[in-house]
Length: 301
Length: 83
Ligand code: SF4
Ligand code: SF4
Ligand code: SF4
Image (cartoon, rainbow over all chains, first blue to last red):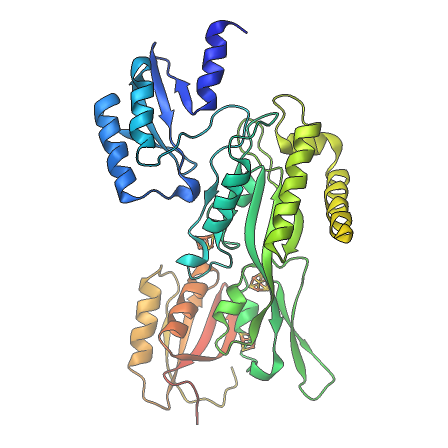
């Protein structure tokens, strides 16, 4: 590696990328879950005025970039940002800023506290070195606003619906509004004469039924997180695979994420994305390994 | 549909997008008498979800539904129960 390349790698590590214009850099800022305070925005604005060219660029991962910062101004600009608690983002083969939708704090469909989860993932993994870039996203429900399955690890809020006969008026509306037509009505031999059922294989755990039933006959049976692994868009896109459909505790989510992350660090080839590593080794092998380790880990306690 | 309900009218919301469909539905329901019901026909998919959500949020009550071709007919009243 030449000195110049080494410098570039070091700068990339702290979120500064060389532009095609000689001596000019992009400063990539970190915004966990896309959140910044108004004061931070004001500071970013003044830094862009003073050291950039008076504009910012919004990235697809909820980040802000200040473009056209001369190399001599990188340090003063960074310090000015740090004063307001604005940290630099990440580039290169490491864990990138964690993205998240607003989640249950403000969104009516939200099933989980996405931001708290994103902050915890940030504290644990941000900037950790990986074979290739590594992206994590948290999304509050199956609407999937932050696209959990386009990330190396995605976490999506999930519910498992349960039908309560006593509240159901047999209006059959749920058969129509379930987005994947997973709900069916069946005649039965008992005194009720009918039953509504979910086809678990097609259900996407989306909470539409539990939100829309006019008499609240669909209730939340189980609630938790769907954990996805191996998604990427980029040059060779691959949708993430479900590692586990419903994980009920936060603790188990972190456990699985940790196992998946370690598995990638240990087995991924240089520049190989997690999903492509999974395809090389075999999804079932990987899943078995990750889930088995989790079970053993639990038993030990 | 064979129905014990006193259905006053039908509003066709097919082809209308959100939020126009939901607003029209709520206007029609608001004009009902206490014992009256109305049939609302809405496209399946997101339109149905939006309209049902608005009707529920407004405190109106859906009693019955019937799938039609690419659409759903829902029977709605202004009150939570029919006597
Ligand atoms: S993913 Fe769900 S919870 Fe998150 S913003 Fe979208 S609809 Fe709301
Ligand atoms: S929408 Fe609710 S009340 Fe109507 S059939 Fe389904 S479960 Fe029963
Ligand atoms: S959770 Fe969603 S996909 Fe599953 S049955 Fe309910 S509406 Fe259908």
